Length: 123
Length: 83
Length: 236
Image (tube, rainbow over all chains, first blue to last red; front, side, top):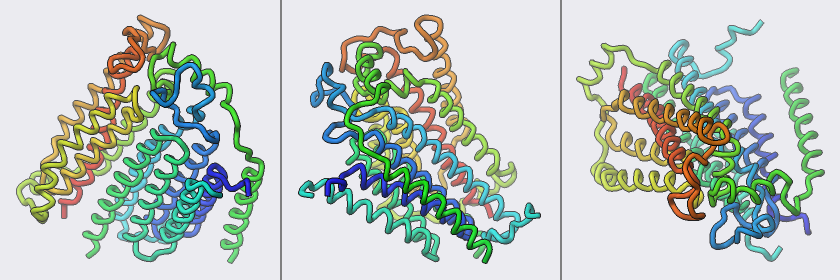
């Protein structure tokens, strides 16, 4: 069973979480459950991106006593996906807070959290 | 198979998927929000196993701290207007 | 019935794409070319011990500028949508109609909140030596402010002071970037101060100063989002 290692487990988990997030956005009726679906979708894609840069038996990309400076290119994992995911997590929080503000404003207008009542734009 | 980290990673993966299914199918909204917080926390531990300490710190502080608190503020405002 | 079939077709199509991606994934055995360039030339050009910091602040500094702008827009839009009018604010200040919390929570929060602020400041000052940086420190400071709100719901939140701190930090960040154009290679180049010895606190040029301003700005923005949401709890 040589395919049972850390990066395979985490990439399968990430893709399954992505599928569950898409399913929650498409089929749930409550507005807050749809926002929870967006949060699960974000977390899944971040797990996939970090687990692409992992190299086996290597350590974190920080040059201190555990890693010497001259030989560093053979002892650390890839630092570029981690820098991209750092930005993406903070922006995901901003998008979630903005969606919840819109849910509050919509609730004040019609007093209902069901998405079937907001069918003004359907033709 | 004799490495302890692979067993921990497998258990974390099963926990993440179980909590995601609870967050979608549960009728009470409070339980669903807390299950989404546990998904973020388990993903933060998985980032540590993947040798990424910066990303683990950011996900723990933002995903399972501030995001859950913002959900609960909005839910409280909706319930106070309703009852 | 037709809608359920449609959703099933979309999910099957997505899972076919993902299955193809999973089956063609082999783990890599050595660094990519971009990663090895950053690792080999990072400590001599930028001088920071944390390579992720040197990528986020110096090599890809424009992405950080874009993220700071997006966070500012988010805080401004939330403050605009949930603003109370002036007579509602005076009436809430007179009423104080939220329930007091228990004694254990109030006493424990008085002990814990200064320690949380100190820990957040430590994380964004040492961003170039250990894991951490501006965004993590700002999120921890916002968690400390949330603890203050949870222990004392009737607290008055001074919006003008917090938005003053946020504006000054944002302006200083852009000013340091423009100083990089004038004195050194390009925008947000950190060689305007000298690089110093590798691994000490005052090394890596102007990276500690940039991270202090980013940490204060992110902390002030997230605190103002939580403060606005707390003020909407008081109205009828």
